Image 1 (cartoon, rainbow, N blue to C red):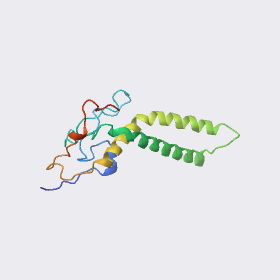
Image 2: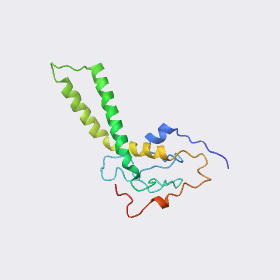
Image 3: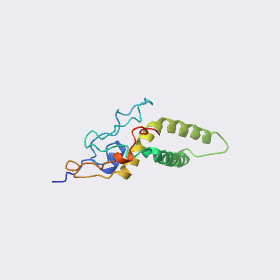
Image 4: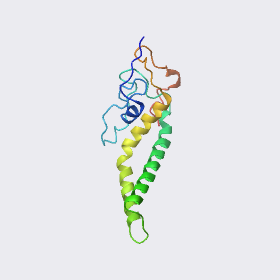
Length: 152
């Protein structure tokens, strides 16, 4: 039983939406696109190592907080950059322009933010296993209810 080091690091795994256990399988069924109906459709299990992507009913409720925090962080960063490059003034509409720019940017980024938040959330609860080829993922069947699965 020999450990195999993944070619992806933690950041690349989360940003690329790969399985946190094997860092090989994709978490989402379809590639990223602005088709809002299917943007969050996840594989039930990792196609490479078999890791369940929904560990328990309602597992992804917390991603709303993660996505919100990231959106606030991006807003603060854009405000600081705008202030340093363009500046804010009460004499003209620069603040209104920043507000419009920031709002449009957040709306355009929202599908990616939701995917990123799910990938990040799952990575906090499922750690990388260098021996994933030789071991099975944790059995979560007792925590799942098929009638309630994906009911969030």
